[in-house]
Length: 376
Figure 1: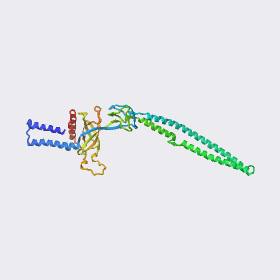
Figure 2: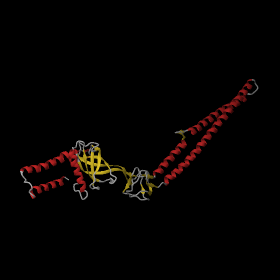
Figure 3: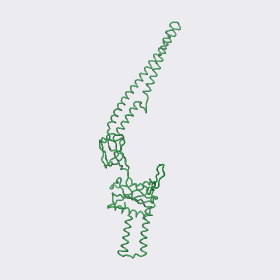
């Protein structure tokens, strides 16, 4: 644009002073002509350049999500087409679910078996408790008989051998009672073992079943947000590796403009400053936006871990900083991911005359997009 203005100014001066001789090109008018040009150049460099910076490098960005299956296998079905709008939760594609359906069926059977086993364990506890009660009763009876025989033996009414036999019977029943009580405790431990209020065996079967159901559900991949799939290249029957991205999903819920601003014009930019954007795909249209973030860093300055000192040729100083703009969309002019153009930012310190000049410039350049803008 500066070149166009310079050329136009040159021809204006030529027409006035040399072609039509409307004025004499005296020392005074020479001072005026070159002074005006110098003032304009100074205004462009110092005023506009610092307080209303302009960039010829801006482009539309959005979130891009590589869509990949949780597990590998054969691609059973593709539900989408390229560049067709999708809503969050719409099905994108489905992997072959047969393997995980088999797992679900298997673990459902294991869960049913686990329920039966828990019922059996409950029955075993009841049986072990019955044996303990029966052994206790037999032991009490044996103890009573022993005391009777012992009293009789003291009165010479029973033999010492009978006393020893009944004492041995008591000891055997005591040992049997200990064994039965140990068996009861083992049965109770097996039956009462729980995880989060569920018997261990059932909890394990439930965990396996839930995992299999999750994997079965994961064979169907859905849209993570509103958006569309771009450059679709897969077809049912393709064999897909585990976690291999097979689709590119472009989010349409949020878009922003990334711009490059020179260090000369970056210092006065703050979050919230207004901006105007002209995209090449919409000649003559000016979009409005605000500064969302200034990235106060430049990748050229980043050092790399190495055992060698950097050479002069490897050190390239950065000249620009990135600025993120939030754009105010117009329903008549959809903002396409990857669209590029030009942008101007109006800082809080910019005088009104500087804003007017920059607006005239960006509007003029936007109209040039109707034909061809060699300055972008």
